[in-house]
Image (cartoon, rainbow, N blue to C red):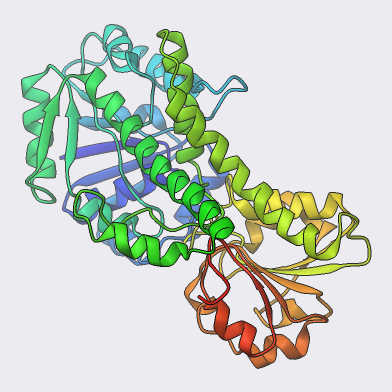
Length: 428
């Protein structure tokens, strides 16, 4: 098939690359000239393991192209994917300016008999509105469920594919495309598909916030959240995923989608009390973590220096959107602290936010120089088994604030560390 992807962000780039690797002719189009030039020069704007190799392979065999000529890309393709972002408005609603900008442009080309696949996360009813604008095309809502850090595997081996459309012909074409990746293709109306996307992300967010609330109960009672996690995850009705207590969820999807669904519920006259509680608990996690620091060092942190390991919102990505590290750094700077940071992939994105306000280390141990304590924010693999003797020798005080529960508290206490984590009893 001849396919055009409009929008070369995380979803669009992953989608286009994987479809080209499956044998389709794919054009990735974007109005950002600098981004397209970078892609054509082999510079990938996001970090995803294996992505660069697949891009280069398919460019060489002329199955993957990058262009700013959106008109040409659309006219040459049978299927057009819309994968532009839908950022959050101040009131929590989804900003659809980019989506409708693409739709209006396509409508001006007077296209007929094309399939338009909307992958951008949009409020319920949006696909129907787009179908009314693009009367000559068949519009399908096809939400993505990619996890940053494992996006290629998620696309090529998905647990399910959701197709929201009343067009039998369009659905059959997409079934043929996706059948190579997944046999569990679920067809429904577009409104149900739109809600499915939001429901999936908000449910996973709810699991995270639930465990963080249980973690606080564990801290107060002397229980161990890691043991509680083991106990409840053995129940097949609950499962193992998204049960790790820590600093809460971040990234480009969960915070935005929770807020957007709260807004939609309000517009429909639904109170959404559970979703509001999920949101409130997530914000509280940062506050509780920072409180541990001020309880130990005081509210005036002038003259104090903190080393931070981990800046991305999760490991195996360079994405710092809604990352806990940003909120932590901002708060510590406001209290007068100096900060030195290290992350394997996300330093450049953090530099765009903080510039010279903080210091940047070239490796994890150099970040500890002159620091009064270590703050572990993101659970990258290289942080999981550090040399604690080196850590102790570099820190002014043997203090670790662990926002991801990577270490065993009793072990660190035995070798002279003060160890503060999330939801663990002293001897755990």
